[in-house]
Image 1 (cartoon, rainbow, N blue to C red):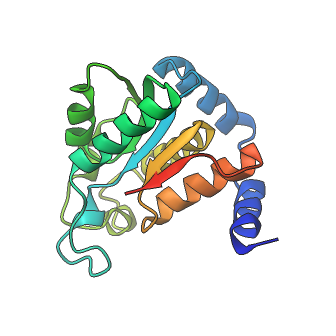
Image 2: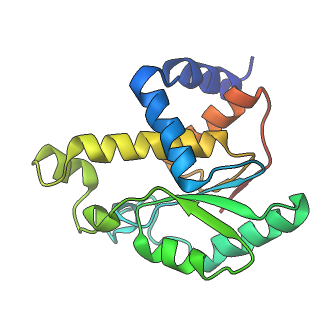
Image 3: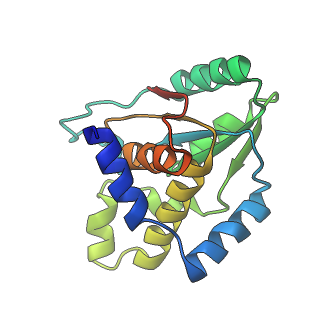
Length: 178
């Protein structure tokens, strides 16, 4: 067993939704109209793109992600994309793609607008920790259920969603790391 398979199996076993979380996940899928086949897209533009991020001095422009969504949609004949993002600008820009059905969690993303990291704001009680954690976990589980994946593997969130997807499917799904 390779490292990727081991880590995706471990994460998949630990992060299996049960009970109330499984019910919330199913309700979210119903609310947004989640149906297969679908591309999962993770774009983090909030505190992950702050100028003081030495590991990622700048974030890829949304156009890079849109190019990959269109390419993957053409290859696999897919017309729906589920977007997990902390940026309302990303959501708005993706909605301009008239040929794609853009799905996302109904969420006020202004809670992510800050020059402080989200974990620091949560620690100081400046954001609702439960809402932040639950929305992140639901987004990750939604991405894992998508048939195709586009994200950035320098992001732990993207990598975790991808690992969960591979574990659930039993194989590595088609992907792009921007």
